Image (cartoon, rainbow, N blue to C red; front, side, top):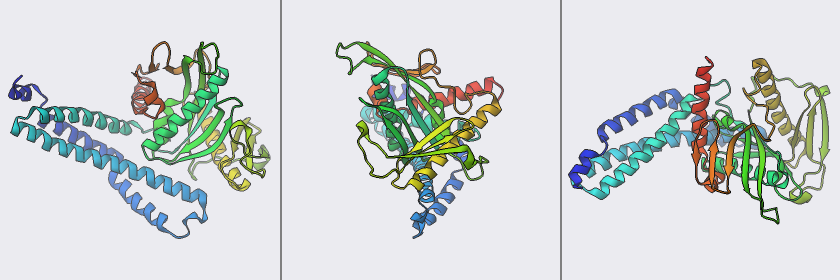
Length: 379
């Protein structure tokens, strides 16, 4: 086909770019980019203070918040620049009637539109705790050693997603299984809106594959539960009476039970009235581990309180059984390869990319699905 005809048949770049620019302007207003940039300056001053690391908990919070905010602003600015560059590329294609440049412009337009749609999803995060950082808990369910291996794979998936976005991850506790994988894990992702974004992944995840642990090569179905709760702020009213706590100390352990510490520095907190149990073994100091465990415990108690107030377990936590019948996402590696979300219908045919942290499509679909469900419920 003649290049001139291709240009006529192709997208109306002026209209497309105007629409993209208008959408970006709306996103900028909703996110309040100016306020974010002011906070970045304030946090930068705190990070530059020589006594920042005298309080490690606060230092971690400040640096994590700064990194997350800077990443969000950079993402917005870079996307805006890509739209400007696209306008120049489209103009060049039209002036030179160059089919190769036109094809490049078409491909970039599709990529930019997808990126803008992804950023626009952030504007849908308006829940009470959506802007908070997140604590992610993963627990192996039915399926034996395959379930433990699957739980470890999911932990890597979320931490790799965080790495892709340059979000700091703080691991509180990992309980390793005897043969392979993990029994459970708990870690924080320090980024603005991490809770609102990841909370749509709370639920039971199901893996179908030929088990590498079965010497007969049989297909195995296994399950793992994912729970996402928001990190608390100082203004949140969650008081824990020390008399309601049982504190156990033990030695930190690594894969296969190998000792990674020679002192009883790991801490397990049990909240007696609710039965909530939290462990932390990422720090060398028992006091530091107890402080980190208290952060997680209070977040879990807040989730429990809000779920009870709403009379719906699914609001913040969900009643996750990690077994047949209540899965929300399937990861199928045999007899075919697909990852499919059962609520939204979103699916991809490359499970390895998903396990490597490419989960934005699932998260965005989940956020849109949740917003639609909220509207249907009148919220």
